[in-house]
Length: 162
Image (spheres, rainbow, N blue to C red):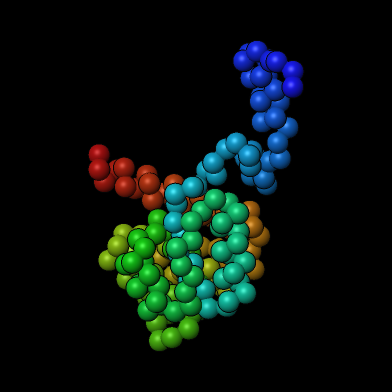
């Protein structure tokens, strides 16, 4: 092995970083932490295939997914256990409690923002939500809606503190 000075080795490392594969969001997968490393998102979706797809997307984007549930009752229970930063909530769920009612309770009890996943958005849904996305949706649209809801929640928290 050839002897290299520390300064020449730094140049090689920089080349490795620049040539390393980046993900869809432009982050260097070898040397950079995902941007949302500690943000927890609870997924509440009745359709198991849709829920699994959403969970995979969130993990790929660097979010933590503490739980995936299919009922409003379970959503409230898991929100209390895991205290996520955001809840993705389908409006139509299994069980007796719908997504709108569960979201209202989660917001009131824990102050956690909720983004609705809905088949049809109406005025009531958009007014109640911290964000909403209409199914079917594109990955970028979901990611953007999540980021906006998190940003809005952080801004609101700062204004309460100030």
